[in-house]
Image (cartoon, rainbow, N blue to C red; front, side, top):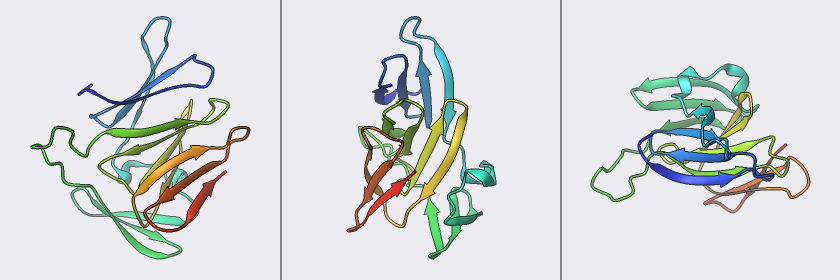
Length: 160
């Protein structure tokens, strides 16, 4: 790991999610501090089609690190943010994470792709959600697997 960027305890305390600068979330067992599993934020072209949201029908690599997504809203550009190595905390790595109330889902955002949310269950990637604007906040409902999230715009979005 290239350094810890964010941490989040599962609701029952049985797992600690550690997001790092190398774009990986590691789930640790708090009794042994061993890695139980890893969730890698792979390049979009490597993702299985089933993991894309219903609104996203295709991802195409236009140039290294530059992707376009065909959605029901038209074509979106998913460029990776250029890493500024002169900054103390560069815009890279998993910096936003939140567990669902029951610990069945973990939502993450990689700083280098701020318009994309990654939703995981314990077996791996469930879905990616692509937005027009960078995702600013996420919050799971307190009693069901409903995710609310907001961007820089005036809308509130939900995933179930």
